[in-house]
Amino acid sequence: MAVVLKLEPYAEALLVTGAMFGVVAVCTLLYALLRRGTSARRGGEGSEPYIGGEAPNILRRVDASAQNLYWGFVEGVSRTIYRVLRFVVHSGRLNEWAGYMAAYYGLLALLAIISLAIYIARLG
Image (cartoon, rainbow, N blue to C red; front, top):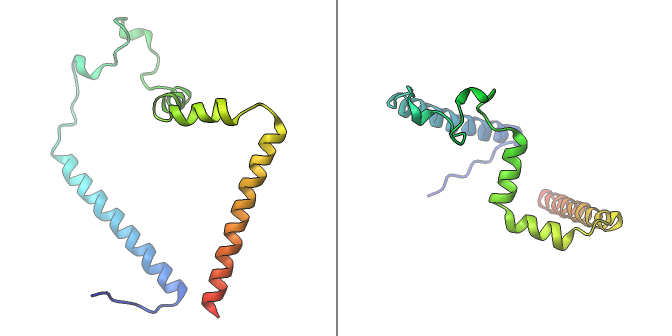
């Protein structure tokens, strides 16, 4: 059985926003409760980064740079997409890129117009 509420748009937006904040609050509370049971202490050899057998003092920072994370994602996770974009779609010509962008923005504009027409039709 479903409950259907007929609300004003502002009241509906307020209700949905409150529900989203409620879900986030519950998830945060569950995370905090579950996190409390685990040990936060780390130590020993397992907590140090592997740097190829070199001494740990050669590192200034332990974290990876954003550029390395980006290329790790591109090469590891989306290797097929990257290859298609690089070797099939990309020819290096500026007019082809402009054509792709024009087609993409045209598609977005078309979707916006269709969505607006559907919204106006539902109001009337």
